[in-house]
Amino acid sequence: MFLYAAPDSTAAVLRLIADPPHLLLHFAAGVGLPDPAGLLQGEGRRGRFVCLGAVGDEDRPALTALIAAATAAN
Image (cartoon, rainbow, N blue to C red):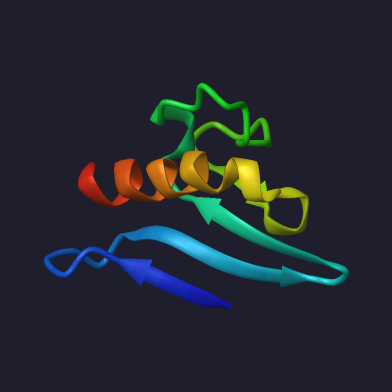
């Protein structure tokens, strides 16, 4: 697992999780992120994830925007 936390925090922002055969990008506070493309999955109280294998080239700008929003919020 790969974990990203903001430089001034110990709280996780993003986690990269290998769950064969899937590779998931987990957003710790995903429930509050804007997701007009509908990439986020999950029903947890806070977290959401994107299955990277299901992301096509046309979805990359939306995924980049999700990552930017998640890191800016922390």
